[in-house]
Length: 336
Image 1 (spheres, helix red, strand yellow):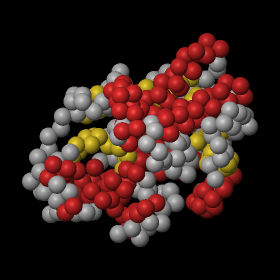
Image 2 (cartoon, helix red, strand yellow):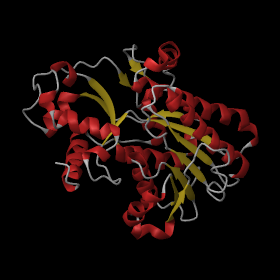
Image 3 (cartoon, one colour):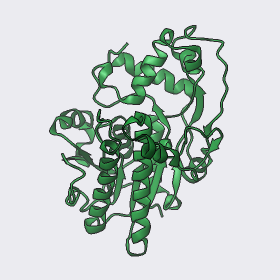
């Protein structure tokens, strides 16, 4: 039997539901036959989501939690749900203190799981959306897998403090939040009726279906895609030869769906990654003849995605599919 079989009676709570990844998770779950309780931070997020999922309104509900870090914030939300997908991240902060990102990331996870422990009597599975940032260390150049942890980011935060690069602060927050999730699960494993899956996607590309009306409202990975691929003349040869592991946002949604259904996914940490590519390959697809067409494809670090294929049966969008569909959605939203 699947961990949580698709059914209108199977309700899944999704945090960060209005975001780039969150919207695709919600859409994939609804199309897969589940009911969804979407958790968002503000009332302003509701109208767009209600309109987008209007045709599935009977199975789509929204809860507003303005402070997800507060103890007990999720107490009511987890009652009656069968699964929990935690994809929300802290709001971006310009505060140079690493704790401005780390503390709310860990605190949000802790708050949610404490509510699940206390009131999630029907919960069978919790899925935490981690990141390859919790796996890949900046100085390590080899194939990376689920056994790897980016402890290097934690060392940098400790030694550099306020001077820690923003991406390193984000990486440290994902390491610590994912570890906190595993620690809580393992501590209570013998007395709970739910298990845990963590999914680790790398840089996410693909068509945005969240509320986007300008370039500035794109999420971080799509802004990076937009300015690198559609403004290639501003990039150096070294930049376009930089390699990046990536995955299509639709496949991230599909991975969460499968992680709910596959019983043997319980207790697993799984990389969700399509491939690794250099930026010039994206430029060749989206802006042919631009950038540095003769750029060399030298890959020094990549993610092993075999576990996602063997446990979840993942099959990934091709690079050309992701590029084409992303560009088409940019045009549909008036961004190009």
